[in-house]
Amino acid sequence: MKRTLGLMLLLSVSACSESFLAAWAVTDLRAVAALVEVEGKPGRARPDPEDDIQVSILVVDQGAPASDSPALTPSPLQWTFIACVPQPTLIGPPICRDLIQPCEGCEGTPPADPLAFPLLRFQVPSAAELEAASADRVLLQGAICTDGPPATDAILRFILGEADDLNPCEDPNNEGRFVTVNIPVESAPEDPNLNPKISTVFLNGRPWPLPYDQGVPRTAPRTGCRADLDGLTDEQRNAHPVAGSTGSSIDLGVTPDSLQSYMVGDATSTEEIQVSWLTDGGELERTFSFITDPARSVLTLWQPFPDAPEDGLLVRLTFVIRDGRGGTDWVERGLCVLPPPPDASPP
Image 1 (tube, helix red, strand yellow):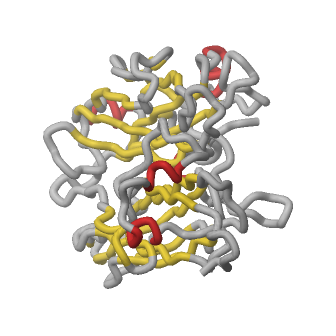
Image 2: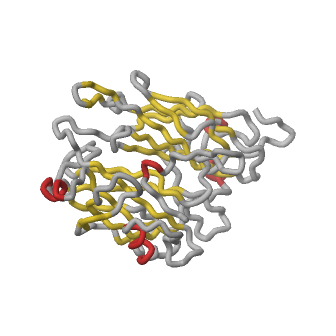
Image 3: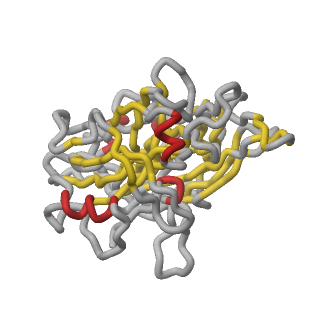
């Protein structure tokens, strides 16, 4: 059963034995984060009643080989979502009660742009409507599929809270995921929660190497990245790890105001930033890290694989931060791993 209870829980289960892949290993389609933005209120992570909001959903998958035509990572996506006010429940997955309409972008079947990710817009209901439903949040529920549309009947059963073995896609051979996004409504408008921001990502103590220092094109194939290094200096090329080499350190930093202080009753608390580390190649030291005040950065290690093809193997790394109160940010970076030079030992 491919059922997601919420993006906040998507990465909370790590491997419990050697028979399971570590949670940082991206080997198939995954929806890993949602970013909420409030129209006219820059930086806000949680809306007020009647705010217009935009929700972006980050989807990752293992890089496609160059033999795929075209090599697109993830494959073209199609999705169907419903925005709603949830029923008041104490246990189990959230269930929709009242639909929120219109929802712009909720029907992405098929999207006009094959490179599009889910981008959904709707208005939060009024305070009176939320109070009538005893709701302090709104939901987005639906499914994302590759290379074909989601299954409408399965989405309906998912939204109704049925726990049968459901396939999210009309074609059961397509990859797909059910997704629920919980969006808390702001409880302290005078001191609103803001999205944290990733400020720096360093590799081995230096700025991330070109050409993947701002992300990796979805059209970049998994194999053949050596050509992407043409035109770089020797120093820039050598910043990319060699297969079989020792591990590389990754240092992620956040902006000084990312760890907000806030009130819980009469006490003042400070946010703790959770970092989720993800990669589709090599091994990460851990799946989660935490940034706590006064720290503003955190380290992990990435270990390359022992061998690489002569034309290079592209590795995608995704880093997601969450503040525990609805705030989110993410970045993607890439590395081109080449084999060691002939008759040379890895560094």
